[in-house]
Image (cartoon, rainbow, N blue to C red; front, side, top):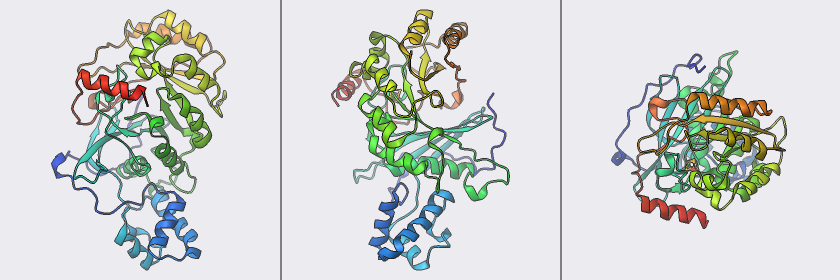
Length: 403
Ligand code: SF4
């Protein structure tokens, strides 16, 4: 059962500001830079090479361990270095333009980012915090919009605008820690952090933005900084097969697959990327995923759609397909959104499906829908960009298939 108990005092709720008032940042932020990149920036402001390693350590600690929001706070860094940095850089995170708090404690932040093309325009992404009794999970976005157009997903109705940078991905976690007052030095003597887990399940397909997602997750999991263990970070993909192995080798986080169907014909419709990487290929990539074991199972996400993919035959075929893969199956009751073509399966049917899978030896929890009242639940993330016409969608789908 979800709870908000343990939430610390946070800043006042934010009201959304109009898009037209957005002013892109004048200076670049250091957030999202690797140690080597930070050293190079220090070199740019004249810090001698022999001092750079030590200064990088200090910066890293202030940025990612303590969550400093200005150079002034970094008291262990020399004044000259601080003022040199402040002249050229900031430690800004994405701008928070709205915060919504669900009656179940789920929080959703709408973040504004520069368009990245030098124009005075803004993009928006969303980031969601889901508190539970034993953990707090932050759902992070990897792209503005998504090209994959999964037919049950609200986010998929938004045009892909661009990939997020590593800084914008790390920045989402920093914003959430700021808003929840969840940095290390504010920890209570016995307290754990509120954000214990990260899921790359927000807007976008993370494996279509591989380098930035990898760089960001390496920062997030760094022990001397944000320090969220790789075991507590899950990357969810709809099945970009060539990058699945790379994710295991280069990032080493837990893997989740948005499966949703057990027959290619249906999966082609629900997750159109399946036409490019069909189920058999996808499951082979899962069998080969580096580091998968009974202790580190691959999660298969399965949204329950009434009369579409929820029969007992589907459950049987699912069990057959997953043979030999250390797997758990998350059953997700469908969250309807305005204009969606599907209905959520009946509760009784979800239970039958779950029971069959469970009796076959797989953990098969039914995920409690969270944040329904603020449209923060799975597949509902969508910022303000207009809905696409059917023709535009088709064109984008074709583009994604030829990537
Ligand atoms: S489910 Fe994921 S990959 Fe599919 S459209 Fe939605 S955001 Fe994109």
